[in-house]
Amino acid sequence: MKPMSRADIIRCLKSLGFKGPVIGQGPHPSFMIRGTVKLQLPNPHKKKDVYDPLLSKLKRQAEVTDEECKSA
Image 1 (cartoon, rainbow, N blue to C red):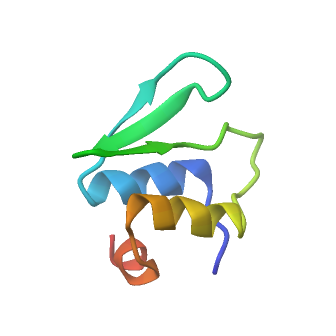
Image 2 (cartoon, one colour):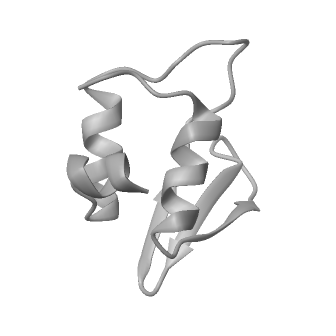
């Protein structure tokens, strides 16, 4: 799977109906919501992409396929 930036992840999730990012509290400060699914976002890093296995874990938790993200 091709690495994605945090901004690309957020863009993909928004196009698939997620709301946010919502700023939370504690060690995981932002997340996105769609229905009952609450997806914790990775912290932003300076110009660094998110790679597998974290990217696969995010997609699995969001119930999103690779094809859905590519077409978004």
